[in-house]
Image (cartoon, rainbow, N blue to C red):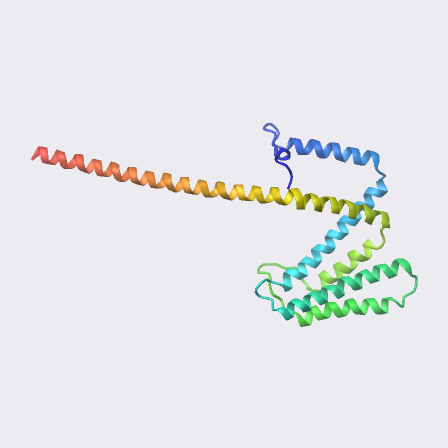
Length: 229
């Protein structure tokens, strides 16, 4: 996803020297000109958002497999996820805007309906062989609710900064990183194919040489026998 220049490894230290220098300078500049509170809030937004996405992805991975999950179960999964995420957003928004508790009598039951519906109505499409997250869907659903609730305690400016940086990174990925990853994977695949063909040719040449040497030896042996007789 990044230019090849960043992947240069120093022969003496064995570290990516260019990437280390660039990240060191960028981090120093940002830390010098930015308040600690802004950096802490921005880091909190990104961390909680990623944790929420991981919990949602765990539910999708456990309940959906392409070609296995039926259309009806797929719709149920989408509806339950929307109920869980939507009610979690409602809980966080209501907590930030009101001191009353009446709103929680609506949002909490919706979250409970979404989680129970996922637990009862949607069968597991994938079961872990060795170890898996326990108490699915309760634990991931609770994680989604807690992370979104904590996100509701962060100021609006931090969300704006997070949105701007996320949009820039997404644009970079779509216009540069995606193509670099594809070209790199394609080049690696062609190299593996070429190496495999060359290896096969070498092996076949070795076999041919061995056969030729064996044939020559047999011919010499036969000639010696005929001369002796």
